[in-house]
Length: 301
Ligand code: C5P
Image 1 (cartoon, rainbow, N blue to C red):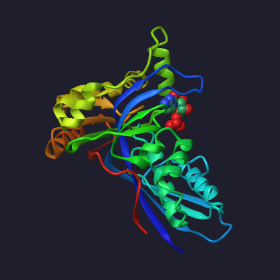
Image 2: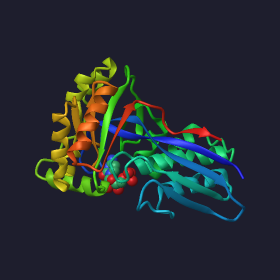
Image 3: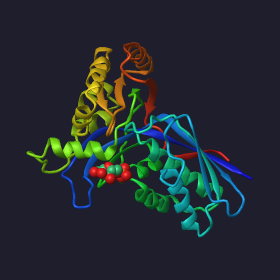
Image 4: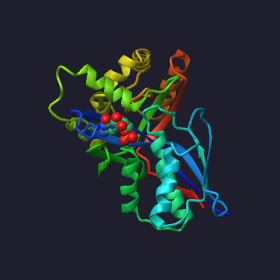
């Protein structure tokens, strides 16, 4: 019996511009992803031939442990690619908020792809793993890629972005999750009378990243999904205000929410904002994380 352990980071979208709904049911995006030092782990262990995939989860409630979990599909696709039976036990250690807009499920899928590839000594290859990742979900390719990257198409076509320095973030998770399709649906309803011409990137975000300028980045952050997330969960407005009052350089809903992220000057400033937000009693958990960091990778085995 052998085990491989992989980790994958949480992501935030520093910029998320959403174009009009396409015929494929997806919205074209112009987004900037950044991976953060908050990781889910996947332990993949060989099992006896014919036993199939088994899945266990620690650290979160309500995560499916059957084939509807993206990690299960990821293991199955790697086995298909290698032409072998998918006999593996997967154990997920969840630290990224579930249904929080930080791509926790996608992180688990990306970690499972690299863990199973290593466990089965398959050497599927990075390029092919990226293609398989895109079939699992729009955010999965970035979870393999990591760092800071522009995402176009569904968010799955990536271009790396060079950044200077490290940015320090505070993450505040809400009591319950928001469904990504529901938030996109709400966006379509809110702008039914004035659909956007197209998605676009922000020069201000790109130059702040190049310069490593947290102050400039804080005022340039933008997310088209913030308004629909706020309209589905109005209490997020108070949380964002509390973060700004606590001194954050920028505050926004992460991806489709409801996790909110706050940009700090440095690590000590992040700890200070986190302490104030914890005291405000407006969210379930508060954590500090830095970005960018590497994408999914093997850490043991
Ligand atoms: O790709 P993923 O499974 O994460 O997408 C979940 C849902 O989010 C999609 O079914 C779609 O409703 C919505 N979505 C979208 N446009 C995107 C990405 C996701 O409308 N670019």
